Every structure is written in C-alpha cells, then in structure tokens.
Length: 288
Image 1 (cartoon, rainbow, N blue to C red):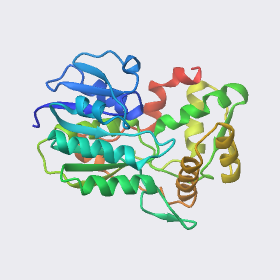
Image 2: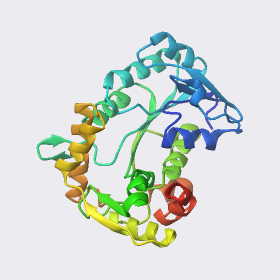
Image 3: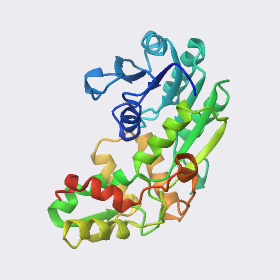
Image 4: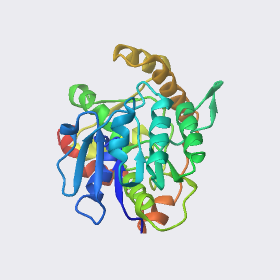
C-alpha cells in the first residue's frame, strides 16, 4: 500500500468531498487543496490548505511530502493549463501517482465536436507526466438530479436534456471509492477506467423513482439542446464550458452513454449502487 500524504483537489465537490470522507481517520494523512480552506469539511486526519492552480508557490507548499494526488479541476471555465501546472508541480515535488477524474465519452466525436476535449488534453498530460496514473471516466452522476429539485418542488417537472436516452447513472460515492482504491492500492496502474452504475436508466426512470419515493407524480419534459444552451447563458456560463457541456449532452442524446461496465464491482468487490439507493439516501434534498 502506498505510503505518504494524499492530496485531494476539488475537495468541496461531489467526488473530492466523498474521497475525503472515505480517507478521513485512516492510516494516510490527507491534505485538501482549496482556494478557501474554510469551506472544506472538518474531518479527522484531514488538513485543509490554501492553494490556487495559478499560484506555483501555493502548489509547491501543498505538495510537500505528498505521494499521491487526486486531480479534479473546475470546468467553468475549463483551463488545461491549471491541470498541467499541478502535474508539473507534482513531478517536481516527487509525487509518485496521480488519479485524474475525467468523464465518460471523452475522445468521442459528436456533430463535428470532440467530446470532452478539455479532459482529453489533461488525460494526455497525465499519461505523459512520468507519474503512475489512473484515469477515471465515470458516467453521469446520480447527484446531477439535484439540479431538478427546484423544478420538482415548484411544478413537479423533470427537465430531460438527453431526450430519453439511457445512461449508466452512477452514485458519486462509488466513483470516490474507486478513486481511493487507485490512490492507495498496491496494484499496477496505467489504466483508463470507465465507471457506471449497474443499470441503464433514462430521466423518466429516475423521475419514476423520485416520484414514488416522494409520493408524487412527476412529469418529464424534453429540454432540447438550444434551450439547454439558453439556460446556461442565462446562468452566466463561460462560452467554452457551455459548448463542451452541449457536446457531451449531444453525445448522450445520441445514445453514446448507453454503456455499462462492471468496473466498480471489480475494484470495490461489491455491486455498484443503484440510482434508487442514492435517491433514498438523499431524498431530503428533494423535500422528502
């Protein structure tokens, strides 16, 4: 098992936060990198440190004594230079391994656009870094449905941006579990892992589960790509990030994410969690 400090970036997000919880109180000292360390949950054995991908000195301080890094960077706006800066600092600091959070569909083509082009560039940098590496390409997160909560509460509507397509929706806690196994395990690395839940489900399937648990009938409405783009513009999305999101969603609408793997079960020794399991555990977020 790898020894040394583990650095977690994206420490307040869906994956980074769950990785912290899994590692907290364990045998590995853990360091959480954040621009605002006060926003990092207080957990046993977790040290929150200030850092910024544009500040090399802060990265050097954060990486002192680190043996493994979870690389998660914010995609709005997507900046490959941030990932490269962290990788360069990690190599200089003597880090041994990096686990990169990417996304399913990365490297595919849709409507003349490269899906996940930002992830693809970072994946290439990870593979060429000289570090031991694992790339994780999870399917769409179950937690993405939290974006429906307000619409469900107001009018019982679930917006469907992928047009009824089915996906291997995955519990972020399973992604975090695989990330931890790759960060601390003693097996060989150098692999790209596609992670999915145990079933292919649509937005309508998810709405049925949520409605049944809430005791309500929910209505699914298609959200075409132009309407999705319009909403993102209203929310102030960076234009590059928006087009990347549209390309990924278009790929999913075409059926590209209708993929199932058993990788979670192979790595964790148990089946991947169902969407219903995730929904039960988070029903209060929907008013249940």
